[in-house]
Image (cartoon, rainbow, N blue to C red; front, top):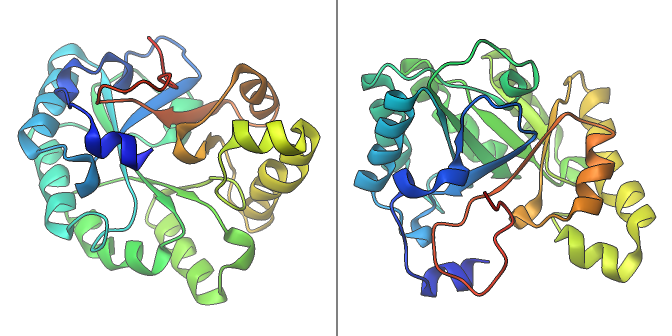
Length: 242
C-alpha cells in the first residue's frame, strides 16, 4: 500500500468524501492515513476539519507510531486544530452506539505500539482527545504493554482489535480459506481483548484490505469496521468506494 501511495498523486482531504461520516448509519468507516509517508500536509488536514465542522460530519484520520511514522508535533497539530474548531473527538465505540450526530474528528492509531502511544497521554488529556487504538499482535504483547493499553482505556480511549498477525485479509483467505482467517486472525483478536475487559465494538482491517465476504463474518461479531480512504491516484481498487 505504501509504495503505491508514495508514488501517487494526492488530493485534498476535504475532497475525499469517503473519509467523512455523515451519521447515515453506515457500518464501514474509512480513514485517511496521515503518516509522513502519506505526504498529507497540515493545510489538507485542516481543510478536512473545516469541512467536518461546517457540514456536521466526522472526518476520520489514522496514523501508526508517533515519533517514528509521524512526528509528535504533527499529532499535536491535529489535536490542536480540532480543539480550536470546537470539534469533539469521536471514538469508534461512539459510532457503534450511535451517539447524537455531531461534527467531529475520529482519530485512530494502528498496530502494536503502546510504548509509544502512552508517551502522548498528557498531550491527549490537554486537548480533551478521545482516541481509538486498533491493536494487532496483542497475543504476544508484554504485560507492560498491556498495562499501557489499560491506562489509555482508563483515560477514556477506545481499544479495539486489528487482527492477530496484521496480514491482508483477502490474500490470507485466498491462500488459507475463510475459516482459517476467522479462527487464526479475527476471532482471537476479539476474544483476547474482551478477556481483558475491553468491550470491543469495532474492527480495523490491516491495510484497509477487505471484501464483502470478510465484512459478512466481521459484522457477525462487531457492528463497525474501519478501512482506509484513498487520497491518491492508484490502479488498485479503493477499499472504500463511495
